[in-house]
Image 1 (cartoon, helix red, strand yellow):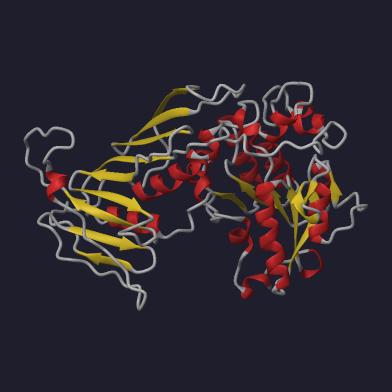
Image 2 (cartoon, rainbow, N blue to C red; image 1 turned 180 degrees about the vertical axis):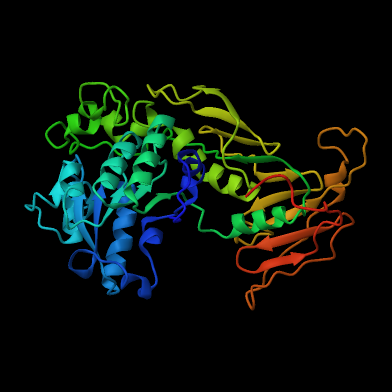
Length: 443
């Protein structure tokens, strides 16, 4: 983090853009390792919540260890004993993960169902929080107060008050904290922001994104339910976390007491008590990278609507929803989704002079990038889908060759177009009309 610490509000604005994976948080040049003082000269990592997502983080640390880098998967915590996959040790849960990491199962300080044992271990340097959402704030705060660096899976917290509490704890701690969001390691978004900030699309008016799926088994119901998940193998009371509220402020898990239910435990994203459904599980990815490109962070007002229109399976969270946010910079952001249809809205940033369209498949080549459509400001009304300015300004046709992977383009159209690809850079021509300075959207 910067030596000039931002305000609590400022940190909340930027926190979601900090990391993409635990490996990214811990993968540093060899020269950096010499500057870090860890237990026994190594960075010891403690994993909290070793379910399916955390297995990817464990994979990264084990790979780094195999390469001889000074990092060790030192401790694991989960409320579930776990289950091996087809008889092999790579499985979710406490004991299979401990075995993968080479940690003795009987080491109660390093293999435990109580996260406080891991956070309180003086030999642990970094805490990875990969639990359900309702535990993120409490664990992050406790780890920071214990002097640990923290990598926290998205979302950083479940509620706004929790986010404020985490930022307060970080400000006081002086430690490093990263929040993992997929796609932020992709340079496309930073390049798009640079292009916008140069004034190439004029004043930014609107950003649009979506996250559509059509799950045949019900969104988040695809997590398996097995006989190994029972009150004998799951510390249900610890998982609910009803004893961890702080003076009624709900800075820890705010779940209410309830009888054990393996479907609620294993498929917790379906319930408001433990997560935020598509809002915190899916929207966070699309929202973070698109507002990075737009150059905005914290909205003045946000409205949303949605409901359960198809998945009547005892879930609480909507299967269809839309959120609209307005910003002081003079622009709007829209994100929409349903879990019952997979036709996307597409990712678009609209400016007064041009429109940016993002794609991971430009002309059939699956490489991330964007194309820019110039606007022909004619002044007359146009019917939706009619022969408007955009239809007369087709994008540069970009393609790549196996030989050099460089983008080739045909002659730009009248209004001017350009393409940018994450691996090859910019081609084509910028829009013919520009503003005299950057748009009002601020980085």
